[in-house]
Image (cartoon, rainbow, N blue to C red):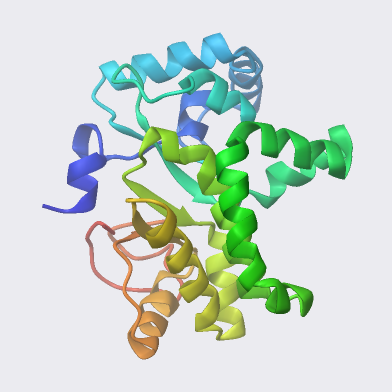
Length: 242
């Protein structure tokens, strides 16, 4: 049984928050229709209702980035009435949006309030041993700390799988830097019981790199067509990434 079969919904599909908010896959529906639906789902109660409706339809998991509105809709603890979140980390865009709205200090305080004091103490203790690398601004170490901080938001939901954001995955590929993947894998395996996965726009390059570097992940989230037309590099043959 594949991971998609275990956590997916009808036809093995994974539901994304984008589809909850817009009512369609990316690019489907008119721009006006998507704007109206996005406006409708700005409230946490409407988002909660959307999640409950999709769970009733059989979707078990929602692929999502950390967002205060999402956490409010999901509630403080997981519920069988809504899909389990499958985090995509790190959400740098979300943090920067909060920094613009509340300032860097305010954004940090909001994140600290969400994760709670216990998680913050643990992060601080682990950070002591990483201080030299952080002082050098070692990117994999910084990424590991940021991923751990974001995962603290999701641990109460016991997510089945976590995905590294596609931009980070493809950056690691472009830099030919396996340490970025190693840091991410440590964070997920050390702080959660979830399976670590990677999101990418370059599935062919990723598969080759993982084989060369001797790294294993449990899931890959990528654009997929039977013709292979959307894969980079182009591939031939059908199938489902899982």
